[in-house]
Length: 125
Image (cartoon, rainbow, N blue to C red; front, side, top):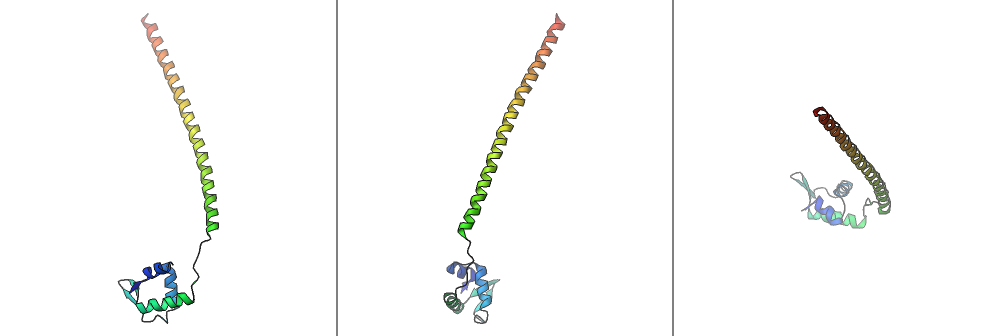
């Protein structure tokens, strides 16, 4: 007995493809498929029938055009790199602004302290 998953792996196809094959050849496979614990098991005879069908009439396999997919991924990668560069520039600008504001804050605090100290010493004289 073979599971649909194992059969699919053996032929390097998806389980969906195997289920489609089972549906297409339902009449030939009548009585050769066992359902056990929510799993569909193929008897040795069912495997032989499917092997014969697969070898004589191979089902078209959905293939992804690797070149097209590669181009799409390259464009996505390029766009993401541009976005990263823009965000890095914004981050640098934000850090520079933070440093500038911190410097101004320090100067204002120093001026405030000098004013306080000068008023404090003027009152004592």
